[in-house]
Structure formats: structure tokens, C-alpha cells
Length: 110
View 1 (cartoon, one colour):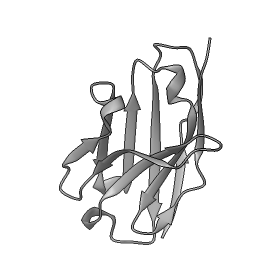
View 2 (tube, rainbow, N blue to C red):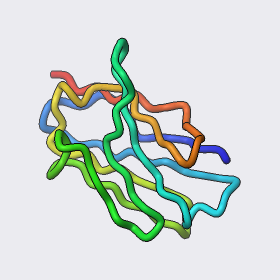
View 3 (cartoon, rainbow, N blue to C red):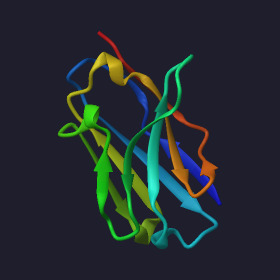
View 4 (tube, helix red, strand yellow):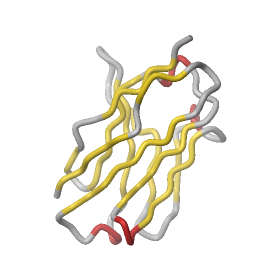
């Protein structure tokens, strides 16, 4: 299994970004996929998860602002992030089973 994230960048507070995670090498549709984030010196935190059937859940701090979705035909999971805050700044990682992508940096700053 391989995972590749994309879509990170620099955005002002209140702005939006859309992260994508593309998976290869597995029967993607049957597995849950999770987005995590990590700030230097802190533990990696799960942000959002989506089951194979599309049931989503979120950490409280992003509820109402982030939306996770998946397109099984494209082996892709996306994370739409709206109304971004400085505290959302982190490296975001995609996770499937015990595989991690390399991460994509999200920086929220004016």
C-alpha cells in the first residue's frame, strides 16, 4: 500500500484548503481512512476518519469546519478545510491500516 497526500500550503486565517490522499496497492473501498496532523513536539492527533461505507467522524476542534469524503472509484480521500485557524497549522498525514503518507504541510498565517 502507498499513500500520497497533496493540497497543503499557506493560507490566511479564515481561508480554505482541500487536501487529497491517493492510495494504491490495496482494495481501497473496504478500509477506513484517517487524516492526522502533527505539530513539532506534540503527539500526532487524529482529525477526521471515514469508513469504507462513508461514515465520517471528527475531532471536536474541527467539527463544522472540516469535511472528509471519499471517492472509491479514484482511490481518493479528501479533506475540505474551511475557516482555517492558526492552530490548524501542522503537517497533515493520511493513514490507511498501518500505512502512512509522507505528509503535507498546512500553514495558516497572516
